[in-house]
Length: 110
Length: 111
Image (tube, rainbow over all chains, first blue to last red; front, side, top):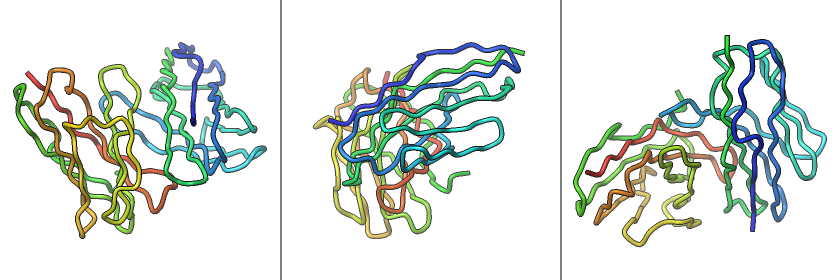
């Protein structure tokens, strides 16, 4: 059974304090790993797709990396507007299972 | 704006009632997914349709059903509503099993 766990559950950072969020997964053939950002009461917003170990993607202050068992979302010099819940999800090779992790709730304090 | 639309935005109803939530996917997307998100909970996958046919089922209750129509819009029907069904319901669409684009959600409150 495909599974996704995320850590930490919640993270509070000072503005400018860089950190990383972890997503660990088990899947029967990874088709893709996805990162989303979700603001309270809103739908998840797509950030990145990673397909194979060693792949990296960047967007502004965010950088996502992938290994065979986990993915990291690195946040460099975060700003208060980066505060949100960050969700990780995996899709298997059959394309029928799309499993979300529980998310990491990030708060960036000014 | 993801291109996925959901109506209504808010729905308030009573226990025992039945409601229908509607979703229009992004242009060109054949797959539609439904998720439930209760307060401070993660996204729970309910069901997926691909080009009108059911493709995958998650933790969807028997009181819930969905369908996808020839124009690819989808409806999620919730019946015999209980207090615990109060949640945000999201629809997402994708081309075919790839990255999903989410709608703004329907907030259901059951009183």
